[in-house]
Length: 227
Image (cartoon, rainbow, N blue to C red; front, side, top):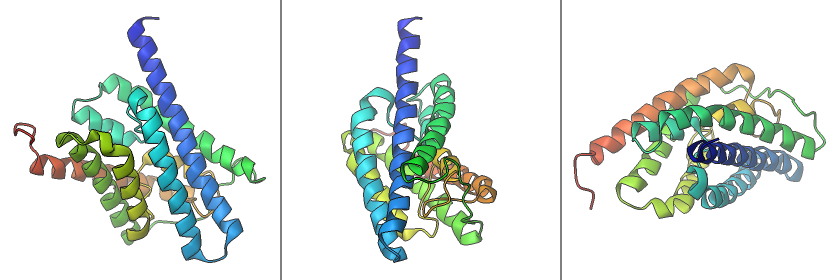
């Protein structure tokens, strides 16, 4: 195995591990929130805080290794931006999905639930589609904009803060990630999504990713000098 192949393998392993840990945080805190409170607002707050803190830690730790994408939309946006080879993104994709599925299963088992319990939380509606498209557009916009203005070192805090805000300002609670959408299908909990809603959400996320890239390129064209 060449040094390049070893490097790619390590990056893919980082994406797998990060995706699994992020999903454990999201799903596990969702299950815990349901057990700790019957108030939906408080459940969302508990789920949000855990996600924000967990995401910030994972980006800080794994960012230097793989870029800490944990999200196919982020990886393919990086391909469009020419900061990640397509080959790497295609390797990241199955690792991200598999990591998110494993994370959901692990969270279920930690709370003595069935390893796989498909969610019954139906999220198919016009407002949900709009929310997911906007949430994903905002995520891609923030990530790429930080790179364009040379603020990449702030990514952990800014991206985690964005996700925390988006949890509250979107009716979909901002999945903004096809891989974790698949994973969250595996848990019939506060953080879950019904299987019939998954493709609907992924379509919205793809649209949002495209819109986010268009927006950032309108404001900071590659041909312009970034100051």
